[in-house]
Every structure is written in C-alpha cells, then in structure tokens.
Length: 204
Image 1 (tube, one colour):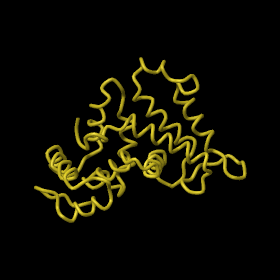
Image 2: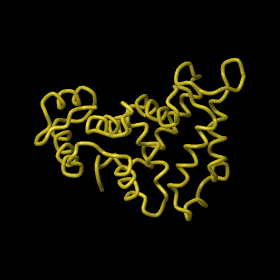
Image 3: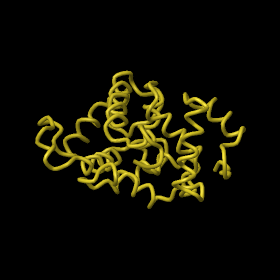
Image 4: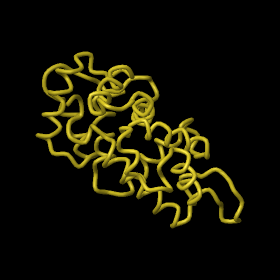
C-alpha cells in the first residue's frame, strides 16, 4: 500500500509513477488532485469502486465485473485501492503495449490468483462481461459469441490444450504463440470496451 498524503503528490511517488508508467508529471498530479477530492481517505473500497463502474454502465449490471476488476487491481490484496495501485492499473489497461494488457487480462481471468486459469474461471469472467452488455445489444453479437457460454467455450478452445494435446488449465507462461495472441486480442477488446478508468481514474 502506497502512502497517501494531503496536498500535492509527493516527489517520491511522482518519481516512482513516472518510472513505472507512461504518464507525465502533470497528468499524475492532476489525477492525484482528483483522486484526493473524491477519496479523502486516500483509498477506494470495493463498494466505492462498484459505484464508479455503475455510473459508466447505467443500463447494465456492472457489479460482478467491477468486483473482478477490483480484485485484479488490488495487487497487495488488502481489500482497498490506493492511488499508486489505481494509476498503475490505468497504465496497464490503457497503455499501447500489448504485453501489459496481456498481463492485466491474465490477472483478471485468474480469479483465485494461483497463476493458473481454468475453464470455470473463463466462464465466470464471461458471465460478468455479458452483464455489462445492454439487452438490446445482445442481438448484434456474432452467432458463435452471443451467450456467455458460447464466448467462454470459444475462448477456452483456443488455449485449453497443452503441448502434449491434453486438456488442462492454462498458465501465463509456456503458452503457445497462438493462444497468447488470442488472449492478447481479448485483452485489447476488454480494455477498450469495458474499462471506465481509461479517461478518468476516479469518477465520470
């Protein structure tokens, strides 16, 4: 957990975040000021985070997906998000680097945080993602992806097999290029279509 101080962002945190992310000092300072106004305690609770997500998806049920995103952002697993965790998460999901998006996407799907993705975890995330889609938009989805079960099955079929052809869970390392590229594409899609912190790290 990074330290949160009143007033301007500390020189130490500013230097740390400049080295860790692609953001400029002015961007970090502005987001810090906004974060401090919205979260005087310097921390965001799961309930506050769910509220933020709900504002971006007023016609959908964003609670479940928000809980998964919160989990993936809470790197020290203390049940709260501080400014540093939030800005690093923003960097990972909005950066142009595919490897960062892959890293975040893997952490999102790795529900139990054991470094290993299972089919049930893929299904769980797909269920949450589909709750974000307004009902009147479901008809626009491709036939082979118009239910969470179909989407999960399609995604899983790409990276469920190990090098020996046996079905198994999927780890973040040692995956084939084909599976890695597919998950990267899913990460690109998830980050670009369902991530409200891209434009504002605290509130709409």
